[in-house]
Image (cartoon, rainbow, N blue to C red; front, top):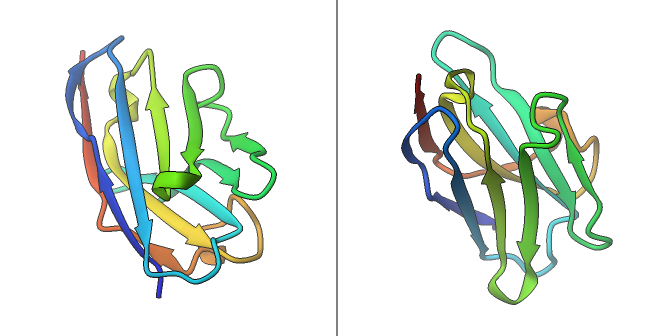
Length: 123
């Protein structure tokens, strides 16, 4: 069973940067898609970015384009989310997720989730 562990969250001021990491383990076949989602208090979980691990194609929600970069290191079984120009509205718990099929942006397509890492951006 796929196990995911996020790290790298923290508190930064607006305009700052963070890099989140998601270490994956426990699988025989590499998940097709790895994604990052986030959930702010009182809000629904929303998709942020995904990567197709086979062809390295990347996908972003509009608010992440130009500021966030998703990448992978296959040798380390790790996916990253580099976040620049952070805004207070980026404050949320960030979750890493893995999927073997389905939509790259729908949370329901992802069967495996990490425990989350908190990102707090102050103005």
